[in-house]
Amino acid sequence: MKNLELLSELLETSASACENFIISEIALNDGNVEVSQKASRDGQQLLKTLIKDIFLEFKEEFDTVSTNCLDYDYPNNMELIKALNSITKNGGALLGCDDEKIVKIIAEKLQQSINTAVEIYINLFEN
Image (cartoon, rainbow, N blue to C red):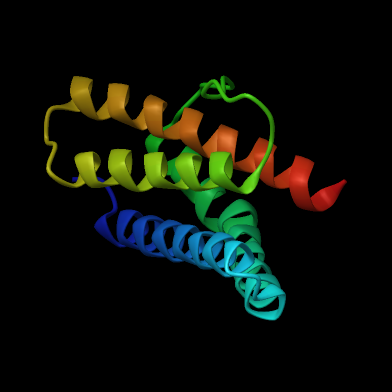
């Protein structure tokens, strides 16, 4: 298995970012703006780490080439949560896979999820 430490870091950080954005949405729906903003900031910080470090390491380690994104309607927190969930789902699938052809297919799907999360993040928080 390719770089177990990298995959573990990818899974943990993506899941934590996803959890923060879920907390933010729940708090916002409950009218707790302060908790929502804090959780959103925490999620953004984790995503910055993913974008500047872990996602780049993944692309290099797994030699992915996909520039495609998953389909989504418009950038919003729920679409970001969906993309982060897809990252953890595909990352988990990589953990148990030894067949190099299947690893390549899953890694490319994971790269599409990464591309989607980055695109949504930029549209929501960097514009």
